Structure formats: C-alpha cells, structure tokens
Image 1 (cartoon, rainbow, N blue to C red):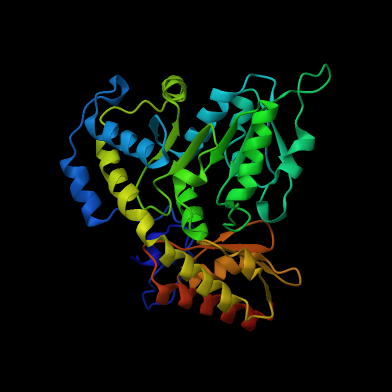
Image 2 (cartoon, rainbow, N blue to C red):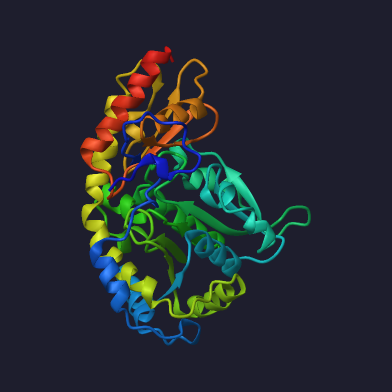
Length: 364
C-alpha cells in the first residue's frame, strides 16, 4: 500500500506531479488488512485487567501453544515485553548481558536501569550473533566488588546487525552454559518468526531453552498493535503484575487481540516474500560503487548499507524522501531499508534503483 508523500508534515518540497510513497522505514508501518479490520469490529470483548476479555485470552492461549509454553501475556509493545522480562528475572544492582547493538540497550529508553535497576553489560559480537564464548567471560557470580549477572538477553533476528539470525546450535550452547551457571536467559524475539523462516526451524524448537520469549505481532506479522511474552504460568502471573505497574493493563483489548490472532496465524506464511524482497534490494544496491554492503548478512527482511568515502546517510534519506522513498539512518553513514507486507517486489526494486541513481548523480 502507498500514500501521497505530502501526507508527511516534514516532507521536503515536491514537484507538482504526485509521488507515491515506498515506505521502507520499518515493518511496523503496515496497515491492518480488511480481514483484521472486520475481526476488530466484531471482536468479543471484556475487561482484560480482570482477565475477562475472551479474545485476549484466546490470543494468549494460542501464543503459548505455538511456543510450547504454559502461558502468555499480551502487552502493548515489544519494549514493554522486554522490560517486563528483565524486571521478572533480575534484582536491583545486577547486570544483564546483551549484545552491543541490542534493542534493549539502545532503543528502550534506558528502562533496564530506570525500572529494574540493572546495568546492561554490552558484549560486541560479529554480525550481532552472541556465542557462549562471547558471554561466559562476562558472567559474574557473587563478588564483593562487581555486580552479579542476573540475566542473559539475546536478540533473534538482530535488528541493528541487519536482521541477522542466530542459529540453533549457538543458542543451545548458550542455554547449556547458562543453566550450569544458574543464569536465566530471555529472548528479544521481536522478529523471531523471521529468524524461524530464515533457518527453517519452528519457533517452538528455536526458543525452547529460553526462560521467557517476547515476540511482536506488529512487525513482520502485520498487526496494528501488540506483542506477547511467553513462559511458565508462574512467571506470566508475576509478569501480569509488572505489566500493570508499567501502565500496560488494557481494558477491552480484544479489539486489538482480534487483529493479533490473524497476524499470528497468517503472518508467518508470507515472511519469505519479505526476505526475498530484501535480498533483491541488497543485490541491486551492491552494484553501486558508492555502497558497501555485506550480502551474506542479509538473511531476513532488513537491509543496512554503508555509504563509502564519508557519505552522509541523513542527506541521502532526505533525497530519497523527495523521490517518494522513506528510509532510516543507522548512524552517520548507514541507511536501513525494512521490507514488509505493504511494499511489493516492484516497489522494493524501484527504491533500490532510486538510491543507486541518487548516489551516482552525487558522486557518492
């Protein structure tokens, strides 16, 4: 789907000819499908804070079933799901280990510190894929001078690493090591279904060793709002209290859960299309001498590329906007495209063509 670029208040001046938007800023920009809108309008609802919304209850039960867990909790956002899990597993003054570009570190408003009183111990890993060899040296048990490790957090797929996926054997080694050291492990699985499709491994198998898993309905799966946290029934009962403390106690939330149920059932079936579109974009970008891109890292629906010779990512994004292509920056010299349901292969290829054309015209 597309919309006139003039709809964006901060858009640069446009030519008189209308330009259709190709929105590749994120997979969060998708609009609800007609099926979702109909389900939302007809949703059976109740008060979810009392546990009485039947549609939310169905969504939580189905999510738990898909992931092979006892229970699930519907939350408004992935950030709330992650921060609920961190609070669930840790005590004030502890550390949580994560990758150096992790979402919980850079994009969740320092809430691990503000809400849970935890320090995030950032560990850099090639392509964002942590291994037990990376993690183990940073684990601290009882110590009189250092914070104790309370949690290990992984992210799969890894957003800021370009949608890279951590393979099952690497996670199995982490699960085993963490169990031996008695440290819980949480997964930021905002795009775990993308990782599942890329690896050809079901989400239940791919996440079986985590104590808790958060996944988003509102990214590649295409729902308008919502994420879920899954785990044991006891943990989810405790998580429900934490959610309330964060202001996440929604009332007649079945209107949202109805779209989430459709996203959960139907969304994973078409993610391979997004991955193929991302690959097509990456291959076309790689033809430009002004662009540096690791094609092997393009495994899912995210494409991050670097501009050579000190290129200005923000300037390129501004020029792309003028041509009807919306993208994001990752630092000073990197640009991010994210493919999703509402952008076709033809539109993705056109976005790549425009980017290469603009860089060629500017000489960088």
